[in-house]
Length: 114
Image (cartoon, rainbow, N blue to C red; front, side, top):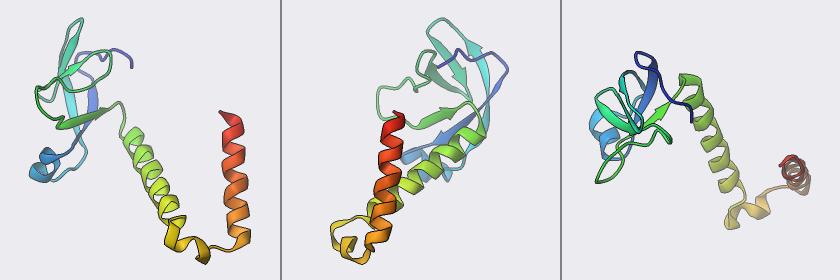
């Protein structure tokens, strides 16, 4: 991850217990200080190299560079969950062979790209 710049706006997503307490919505936060190892955004301390929250307990915040980055991550999570549910053991017989072939071809095409 790149080093944040003092004064820039990042996007904070409360997670875990913090999400239940705060409602879990994405909110803009301003970087107030940046050092060699840590930076502070929205009153929370993060590591410069990973953007992970500095804490002795569980993580309560996840930072994103842009709002779009979070939207794309959410879309990816939703698509993976839908695919997982579609191929769950009890639903496999409901999928047509045509659908399974199309899914198989798409997964093979993606595998070749990596």
